[in-house]
Image (tube, rainbow, N blue to C red; front, top):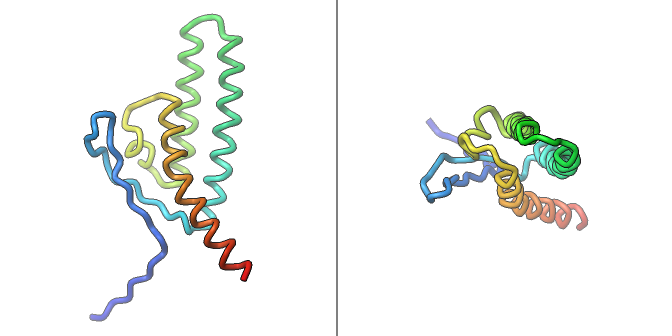
Length: 127
């Protein structure tokens, strides 16, 4: 049987933990315009939520309250990441970790792929 391969621009990245051990493969398609829009919205939302969190944290007087706020924020973004890239994506990316810096690492790491594709689309359609 003959086959037809349709390339849609999927990228696979090996995700490593802190010690450099492979955690899994994260697959995404920066050419997918619908996902690119969701990513852009999610990055803006992340920055907004981070500011909100910092304000709530300043008003929180006990460490238990601060931990609960952080846990709420981490769960919120893990859920949104799973909504954008598929169930289990946050597990592949972060494992059981619950820090804010992991989201910075993630968004910084994938943004370049989305920017590159955006520039290609802009150049192509300006001709």
